[in-house]
Length: 81
Image 1 (tube, helix red, strand yellow):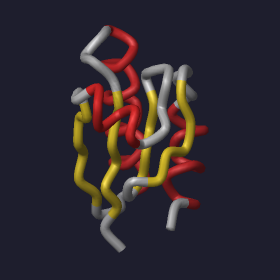
Image 2 (tube, helix red, strand yellow):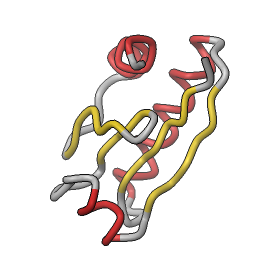
Image 3 (tube, rainbow, N blue to C red):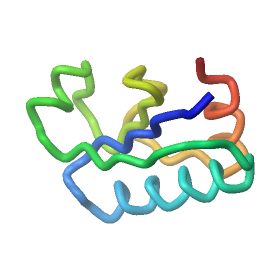
Image 4 (cartoon, one colour):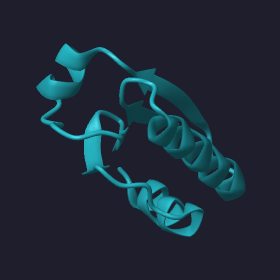
């Protein structure tokens, strides 16, 4: 199953760090995925996120306002439906 991994944020250093970590985790898992940066504030708030960076998989927000380790991201991504 192809996963859409979305990093929500306005492009700050933390958002970029989360994007890189999520992409590294997906590559290590060897899954099919597509990465998306969501920087439209209206779209971010419509997804229920008030603090960034945040991560969503297939439009389902998994967490906000933190940057988990690559190992934690691998678990979050692999468990996503």
